[in-house]
Amino acid sequence: MAAYIGRRLRNGAATTAAAALAVAALSASQAPGTTVDDHGRQAASDSQPASEVAAGDDGATGNSPYYTDLPPLNSPNPSPSPSPSPVIGTPVARGEAEAGIPATVLDAYKKAEAALGKAKPGCNLPWQLLAAIGKVESGQARGGRVDANGTTTSPILGPQLDGNGFALIKDTDNGAYDGNSSYDSAVGPMQFIPSTWAWAGRDGNGDGREDPNNVYDAALAAGHYLCRYGWDLSTGADLNRAILSYNNSTDYLNLVLSWLEYYRKGTHEVPDGTGALPSGPPSGRGGHHPGTRPSQTPGAPTPGPRPATPGTGKPGTGNAPTPPKPGGSPKPPTPTPVPTPTPTDTVDHLEDAGTAKLTATAGDAFTKRISTRAETAAGKAVGKVRIRFTIIGDTDTTFTGGENIATVVTGEGGVAVSPALKAGEKTGVFTIRAVVVGRTVTGLDYSAAVTARAADTLVRTATTPLTCVAGGEFADLVEVKATNNGAVADKVAATATLITSADDATVNDKGPYFKDADGKTVRTLTGLETDANGLLKLPKLYADTTTGTFLLRITTTGGATLTVELTVTAAPTPTEPAPGTPAPTPTQPADPSASASPSA
Image 1 (tube, rainbow, N blue to C red):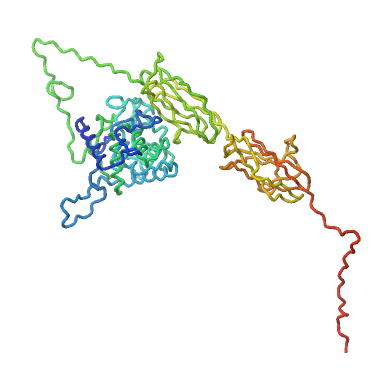
Image 2: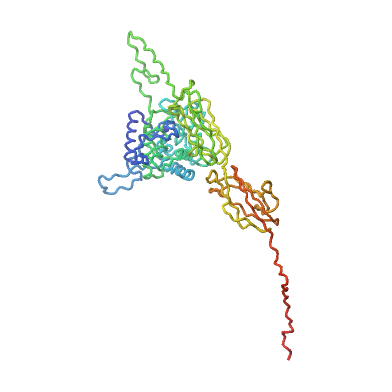
């Protein structure tokens, strides 16, 4: 979304249309292949976000205006010194100012790329994409006007989204971010609307705050936003979907792709505050956030009052209204047109649209999704309404892509289907709440449950008998494998206990035992867990002086049980001589005098 500060912006439908055509042409000429899908088909003109995305939604920016400056057609690399006699017709590299990215802003983009590379490596987010969006949305934070911590020196605000030429998004943050308690405005260098920042915001500079006006926070948030739904941005189709989800406009898609291609060819760092500012014009209709004025280009004259069209009599122009002709009657005032209600305005309530029971095992995907229908007071379905699904409660379950909130637009039947849920490791019941975005109606709550990982079968991985002599230690370790419905049961909780008998599961106080970290005797082990292959290997077993057959019982979540036999035999005694065998004669010490030579 355009932040109207930095340069005087021209406005007008003709200029915007020309810019849109130029964008499309440039995208085709400068970025070949960037708007085709994975099968080589043209995708720029008809690419739409996946059904799980807020297609037709306001996206991150509320589909607000953005700067339509085009990348230079020349190389973005700084121009070398021209040769004394350049070859005629050879293009001279230009665009140094346009390619320069303010130091702190560039650092924020690269740090966000690194963070996403660890958090979501399959997304393959390039920092140049963040730079392309930052260029289009705010001119790289108004040419890098940020402090040492990356916070803009003054807020970057777009026009209020009051439906007057823009999307209608009533206030969602009580003016906390945009200073407007009536309507939302996009905020910061990446131009997030407050309702999106509420769930997408991130702390990119480690100061404990999530500030949309901080370029580190905003860049990291934009990276996570673009990496939703498991998208791989190294593929053309997913790249297009991600950009369109940010601002659902094909012109916007082409423009961002053009800057992406431009920055990929090369860029360089410039000091903060010296970056090139957008020169014109923003897409859509003009306008400023109330209470702000656009800065003027240095040296440009301050515009005075617009001259009124003769005969219009607009107040404040200094022109008197044209008097009526003699004999004529005053023209009656034109009645104020009644605005046509939007689909959102007609929603009276939400209804469940046949959602099945939502349950999943920890770590697994839920097989069912939430279906919610928007209806009028008369029960008629309402299409093209944004439904926001939010996961509430003590759970680490998320929607596909790792987010805990998702916005989906209802179809012609008024139904919005949430993205798939992915269970985390925390078990228990939690809530998913569906609400209408932009209208205050009672939300609809859905209950979901995550159950513990389970196993229904346990078997030993070896068949060797487990034996030991009294007072010794077992040579073989006990290892078992857990499965559930024939599949490997990984990360399943287990307990191992040396029990009294097959019919008495109390702990046996005699026989084999384990040792704890301090070497003390332990006959019950808790907190065990199978590994990724469903295997569980128990610690070494020892035996006291009691002989006999003993039982080790292993149980898991889900009811799998295995009882293992342990045999302790008596220690061997010293071997006794057979009857009639003479005892060995003890060796006598030699007589020293016997070996002495007789004296001469």
